[in-house]
Length: 151
Image (cartoon, rainbow, N blue to C red; front, side, top):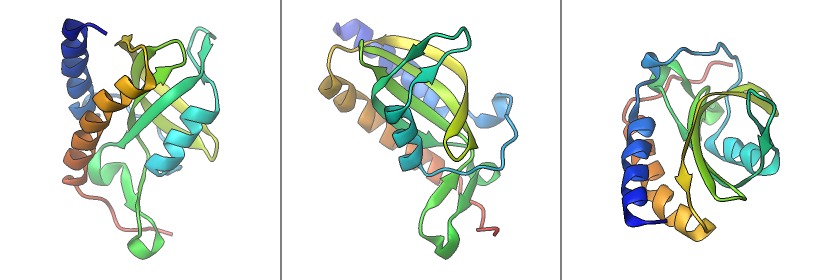
């Protein structure tokens, strides 16, 4: 990836990661996932686009978003569960995409606002670039708080 493309990808990625959820239409769901389950789903199953095309992800990062309206603590206050995520994925062909993921079931989700951000030729470059951005976005989201556990 060329330096100019990398810079443009950084700007778009930060903008997407920090966009308030209230500015986007929400999909109603009763399902909460951990960021780890989100990543697992994206890496183990094909992502299907609205036009029927599919792709498999070599890499994935999930950032829970929305604060108390979309976050709930697990029983025992051990970890955060989210109804909405901003995700960053790299397909095996190198295409980097971001979208909003909403869990729809234990093993199903809805995606919206999908955008191709560019192309990264290796998993290592994707990880070294996206990991710090995803971590910064996650820290910002954690500052918003999380609702108490409701059985």
